[in-house]
Length: 163
Length: 353
Ligand SMILES: [Zn+2]
Ligand SMILES: [Zn+2]
Image (cartoon, rainbow over all chains, first blue to last red; front, side):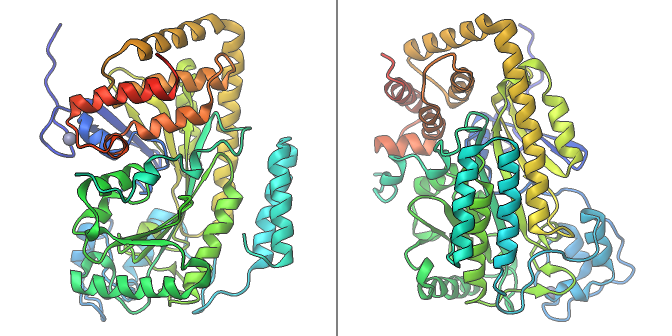
């Protein structure tokens, strides 16, 4: 057998890489070559990984001026290195750059979804909407067991009980 | 040597691996929804020293104790756990590896059924996760929303009118909501339609991950699909987009299963009989092999070629992991010894001997 050049595991940088983790995200393909142990740790496993795929692109913008957060003092140039904020005020402190960074990733400008005002508004209607759409789906696909479960759930929510 | 704390857990199959939703249980292994939340007025965890983290951990723990519906959940500080227990929780997907780095002031909150796991001071102050089996998206969604409502009405969240829920990483901002699922797609891999599936998912804002061994076969033929965007769409839209894509994928896999049953049933039967032969007689089994063999069994069971309970196969896929083997047998083991006990485990659970 022909010996191939041995690849080293990209996680521990120690063992021989034997497994490839392939990630397809946003039209891009990324391959991580891992050793058996690290692949085991990354878990080939059986439940959905609790962790979203780490982002490795950026920085998108060059800072024209190196702003600092008014609250925590994090510099914009520091943020760009790892693209993690230090506090909630960073978002406003680094404008308008943040609008652009967020737009580039999410292709959106405004939050849509759950609204929070220090406490949640009762959202029975919203829950019922989700459940009723699912019920329709289940009936269309002739998933009768699931439809029955959803019907029970709808009754519970209508009664005002939580799940 | 090995603490007893999680032994009870290692001896039972978590709720999300049960076959509650038998329509798709052969294809959809499990689902998860996640919500990322941060507390108003505190720096994000990434930049906190252990003292500050501990303060937030205590604050959150006290809040949980004060919420009637959540006060029975178990709360652990990562620092109080042994290494093997941490690995065990990672294998069980109740925590991420990131939570383990310096475990002081970081923690996990969970329920006995393993439907809920809430990480404290991981990348964000709170990562609420809900796990369900099969296609129980709405049940999972409702549970997640309920927990979020309860916590958010007790503690103050960091929220912004334009950006929604504020998170450490801009890729999670807005809803902080992701939905993901593990799918077993052996026949789409066999027939080559998997690339079509991946392209379709990716073009619909869904990320796909798979592990490949040597050659091109994906290990265990298991793929993880997760929603990509968290901002600019409502939780409801993200969920229904995800479900629509999943339906399409399920239909492709089903179609391919029917085709292959017509054209090459004996080939599948051969593959499965060989697999059973190996499992019966192998003295050592590594986890990669077990993933591959259980995939064959799962496929055949899903196609009614053999009569093996899929839940049993799910259980083996879970228990097969290194920390699980050691906790289950109550003994610290090197790799080779684990391979031996893995063989014992598989034979006894499948009643092969
Ligand atoms: Zn490695
Ligand atoms: Zn800041």
